Image 1 (cartoon, rainbow, N blue to C red):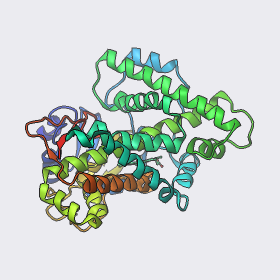
Image 2 (image 1 turned 90 degrees about the vertical axis):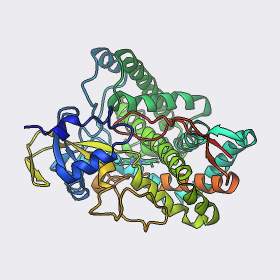
Image 3 (image 1 turned 120 degrees about the horizontal axis):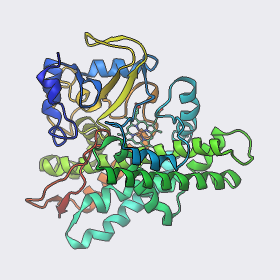
Length: 409
Ligand code: HEM
């Protein structure tokens, strides 16, 4: 029998704004439960989330970003007009996963790579602040938290400035497609944006194959397909598909991290003031934001064999929703887990996942968030919320962050 607690779970509805009290109750009463809403077993405790993430053979990533409900036929028809679907590093296991992940980890963790990006990130952050500082008030999500990672990721990938709006729209649509409840028309429009986005990336892949430039697209293309001849349509689709999922995974999540940091810090003015006085606390503050508001709150896995998680039998063939956002607030793991405290001693959390799929862009994300807070604490130390303004939040199961935050200084 499905419990009342399990029946009430609605991550895009009543639990979208503030899911944390629900997860706290789930951890206490029913830490692993079946949810009809998401058609999966929901796993909420730190230790159980860790067990699932570490067992990549028992819990496949094939459906890790699957839609929360079946897509409309018109959406599927629109997607069918695009590149043929291929597994990417996020949604593959074993040898295929290792092959697809390696070029990203090699590029992103190359010695000096992130350090080398930092002067450019700092210059971009300063230029963004220059564009609104004199006005005394601005929405720091659309004017700062979103453009900084978008421009950084575009530079890293080698996307030309006129194409940036297309990759922004396409990558955001890709996340909306699966993890938000869209109307039929909106879902189809999102699918069309995804098709255009992937086709554009395929064109970049073809060009970089002929004339590599040392950017991420050139490196990933060279690493995934041997030789230097032209790519087959299938090879192009595989490389472009993996680049598409990485571009979105990189800039949307980082924007949400910076946005949530601002929301939490202006909501706790004494902690903002502390960072203004002691900027050396900024890296620890970012870890606390990652713990407190995981930018990727949940992801799916698929049980390849029957397993026991937290005393509950998960049958082979069932889906599992791992809730990073809940594990990160597990009171068994963190003292006073619901208290936001930038002076908390950083401890392991799941904002970047765990196991073989652990985020390869964590250093890039941390670096951008750190520079963002350094620039804002230096240049706008009096930052505070404009009273009475709503803070809309993204309605999605896979990504979470504020969509607008009107601040003054
Ligand atoms: C705050 C920002 C970020 C957060 C919260 C985040 C979170 C995550 C999480 C939770 C995973 C694990 C996925 C899984 O278990 O299936 C992941 C994987 C990944 N992330 Fe990030 N990420 C961030 C930034 C970035 C950036 C900046 C990049 C690249 C530039 C990036 C690239 C990737 C890639 C390629 C994977 C797939 C790794 C694999 O499946 O083997 N991420 N990320």
